Length: 267
Ligand SMILES: [Zn+2]
Image 1 (cartoon, helix red, strand yellow):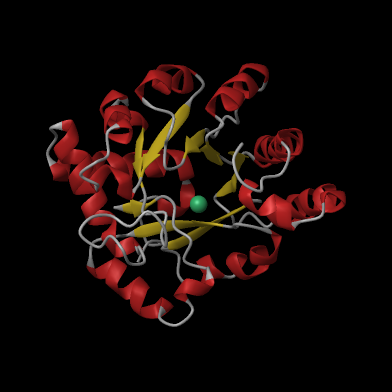
Image 2: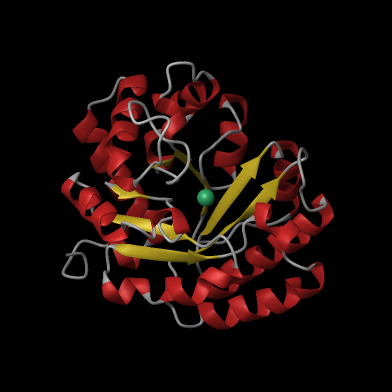
C-alpha cells in the first residue's frame, strides 16, 4: 500500500514521528507521499527521501495557506519552487488547488493564478499535480476546460466532487484519491463517488493528521490507518482487499513514477 497523501511533516507529528513511521511500515504501508503545505516546508521535505526512500515528497502551496502569505510574494514563491523542482527530488507538484468560498479564503482569482503557476511548473518538470478541491468543483471544472493537465497526470486528493463529476474529471486524466471519510458510517457522497471510479483511476490516502478513519476517529490520523481506508474501499466496491491493494499500488506507481518502482530503492 502507498499512502498517496499524508502530512507527516506538520508539528502534530514532531513528538513521535519515528514511531508513527514504524507503525506504518508494520501495518504494510510500503511508501507514502508527503505534500508540502507551503514554502516554509520545502527545504526540509527535500531532505527526506535521501534518508528514507519510502517517504517521497511533493512541493506546492496549499490554497488554505494563501491568506497567510502576502500576495506580492506569489511569483517569488513560484520562482523558488521552479528552482527546487530542478533537483528532481519531488515526485509531484502540490498540494495546490482551490478552496472556497466559505471562511477566510484568498480570493478565487488569486487562487486560480497560483494554481496556473503550479500547472506551468508541473508541465515544465514533467511531474503530476496533487490537487486539492473543496467546495469549488464548478470552478475547477471550468478551469480544466481551459487548461491542459500535465502528461504525468493529476490526482484529486480526498475527492469530494461526487459521483456525478467522475466522468468529466476522468476524461481529463485525473486520478481520484479517497481518505478516511469512506470508513465513516454516515458517509454517502464519497462512497457513491468511490463506486463510480474505475479501478485504474483509484488511489488511497490517509490525509494524516486529518480525516481519521473509523475506529480511530476522534484522534489524530496516521499512515498506519491506511489499511482501514483500503478495507472500506474494497468493501464498498465489492472487491477483494488483496486485489484492490495490488491495483492501488500499480496506480500509485503509474502516477508518481520512479520512486515507487519495484526494486532496490524501496527498502
Ligand atoms: Zn493535504
